[in-house]
Amino acid sequence: MIMQRLRRAVLSYVQEIRGFNRNVRLLLIASVLSSLTLGIFTVEFNLYILSLGIKVDVLGGILSAGPFAHVLGAIPIGFLSEVIGYKKTFLIVYLLAGLSQLVRVATPNVGLISAAAFIEGLVISGNFVVLLPFLAANVGDSGRTHVFSVNSLLSSLAMALGSLFAGYVPNLIQFISPDITTQYRYTLYIAGALTLLAVAPVLMIKDHTLPQTSEREEKKRISLYPYLWGIDRFTAQAAIVELFIGLTVGLLNPFMNIYFLYHLGTSREFFSGVEALVFIPTIIATALGPTLAARLGIARTMTMARYLIPVTTVVMALTTIPLAGASTYWLYKALFAVAQPLWFAYAMDAATPKAKVAVSAWLEITFWIGIGLAARLTGGSFAQSNYTLPFYLSAAAALVTAVLIQVFVGSRSVLHRRRGEGVS
Image (cartoon, rainbow, N blue to C red; front, side, top):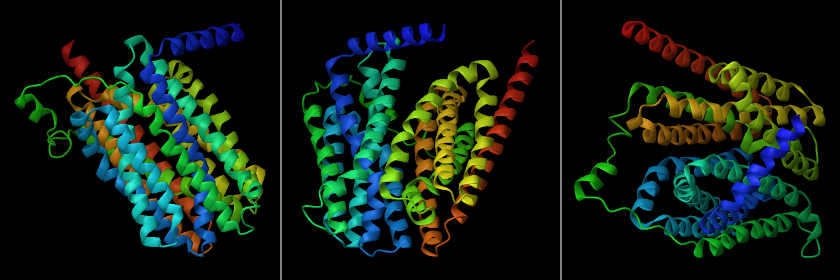
């Protein structure tokens, strides 16, 4: 019975993929190339910076540059795409991102590395903002769920392959130089070149003509009112929750290679395998999330997952066994894979029609603010050889997230029940 359902689901996806138009297929290729780069940088960039003799606290500052750029770039690049079109926006994103990645590893100058990271974060923020509406515009209503799922699946798989690639390529290019810094640099050059290569499929995209609007409608459409002084109560609540989610993630995720190598004493190859294999529990959890939500309810499922996340971070702080750290890390990522999509679905359902775009923007903004602040905290802690404090702080942030979601979701449920009783 289960195999029959799985077979039908696979056939359904294959049929939908065959129905994707040329634009979607081209952008999926570009997205895969970009995700390969991300997987390589996840494993090697921190190690490359440390091999230059740069301290971990300085690394934290470098890693915070991109997230803060995300905050500044999300809304303006969204506006830019409405003016110049999706295709030109993607060209700018992949071209500048690839060049910035190459600059990040071409110089030992911390200022230039940080500036390049900031520019990369600025343009990459636009990729998230533009990707979803572009895919939605190029598929029918029935295919949107599939195209978003396929994009997520392919990106995750490409990141896993990139991570695995990064673990072993330095050993394969020892003939270029026995210096480990040089080996890291050339591997990261390959990663930057992959992002630049993503420009090729984007050039073949046929952009849609943007709908014509009146001058009054155009001004209203790009108004900052819904994003700033016009935000409603739920938008503010969602933004606060996402800030703590960003702190939870930012305290750990950017530094996991340092945790495994310097705290647990593993090899680079071991960590690259861990990072590649995280694809499996993440995909399983992503698939199970909607099923659990259908049985237990979306609010209960995402709240339960949020309460379990701090347990995993505490275990990672306490363990000194690499396999225990790896398995707990996989569970940590799997719980996020269950909770985060359900949180996004709940946020979009709870937001009023006029506030959906503002909610989406603030989820992006506060998440990256949390990431940026957390990166500096963890960098300072690791610089003092304190590899456990960030995990406890992450657990605290995750616990606050769970409590806030339970309170906000519960208060909205009570409000809806009271309104229903009033109507009756």
